[in-house]
Image 1: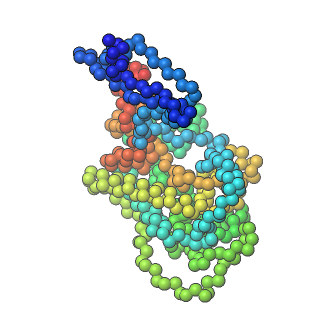
Image 2: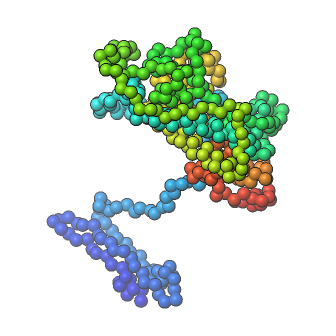
Image 3: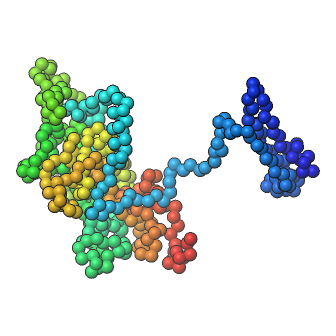
Length: 436
């Protein structure tokens, strides 16, 4: 019975000799007919039991394809971890490792690839196609600031008096994570107080450059040059015109006279510039005495949804701008400089700054260096405070997102993995100990 079943259901073809060469054997799919009153697995065991097929190939063939295992692809990871926390004694990693940069440089020298076209910002020009994006980033930032001032009237945000940690909720969290002064005497506990807007939107400032290709700022000029928010300086260099912060706009590319020396091209022969189309209006920040809270729950939800849209639009637009307009960040401290090379001011106070004489270690900045997200703990239920023993079950989200979610906005898809929406929170500590 077994041999008959095997003969009818398993078919192999012997190697065929063609032109003096042996062809590898061809295989057909094994099809086992299920028996009556038996499952497919039991039928396979009944029909193919005790049969061993040994195929001896004279040589391995290159035409045989490797077996591909089927896997489950998930484009939306669940319960993703947060970015790693770096202490003040650690240097920030480079966006692209040094090993890969050196390997790419060796490949360029080996292949002698033709030089790419120099982007307009490196020759003193503005990318006209990114000017609307710069205005959108500037106005989105103002929208986020103005809406957060109103949302803070209805959503409670607590800030530690000793460190820079904040918590969105009626009461602060009980976790022992304070790294401020005299934290060991308090055993890591926080002392919570009322937070302000600057605790949520980190005020990162940079020097305003009249000419982004001019000479680097020296240490003696550090007090004579104005400092403005870094995201505003990026928008100005990308095409936003602010009367209080003038900047140089060239109409012709610069002329290089040396490796690091250049002169401006003669623009007197150019015709008068044509009148430009009206630029988008620039939003202004609402003064604190004029801030009014939302009048109803529906208005609060709409305000939170608008804030989330403006937050995502600001980050997406800034990510486009920093790819064309270089931004530098210190690898040891949060100092940011918008320009092709960092300044020379010796004001770095990070770990072991005496060995560097206060100079910054400039490297390429990423989006989170320009717009810090400020992750906070996600509160699943505002009426119930967080429990210290259930810390591993809670997720985190940027402070702006958590404020909007508690105000009634829908959670964006890209923040659900870090907020751990799919994790069931135990009702008690005893139940948490039973979790495997």
